[in-house]
Length: 130
Ligand SMILES: [Zn+2]
Image: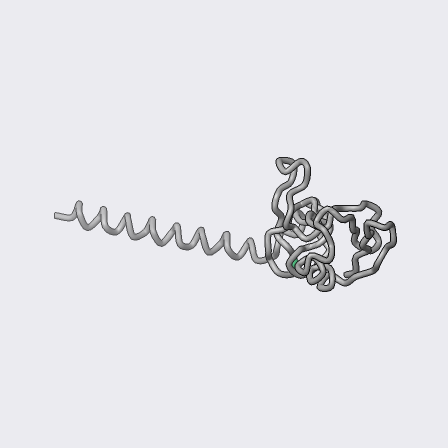
């Protein structure tokens, strides 16, 4: 994943995510400098891109889970600030939530519930026994 950084003098530089983070940490670039993920059209503030600064409308943003590293990422961020993974839309995330393991968990829950029920019935029968 590469980023295009627009410097204050108008020149554009291509940086990797790591280089962007390092430059930001060294304060070589300001958090209000504009950058965009390669292939994207929208310029975003570097601070927003790296997830260190909230956007102008923080209430509209929500945290989504990075599919690569599991870190919470702003839904506005074009890529994960932790690993640089490009973020998918929330629609794709929702469909991805239907993972095939869910029916197994559901059956397990039913079995556990039945076992608890049987135990309760057993105890009640014991208590009612003469
Ligand atoms: Zn990540």
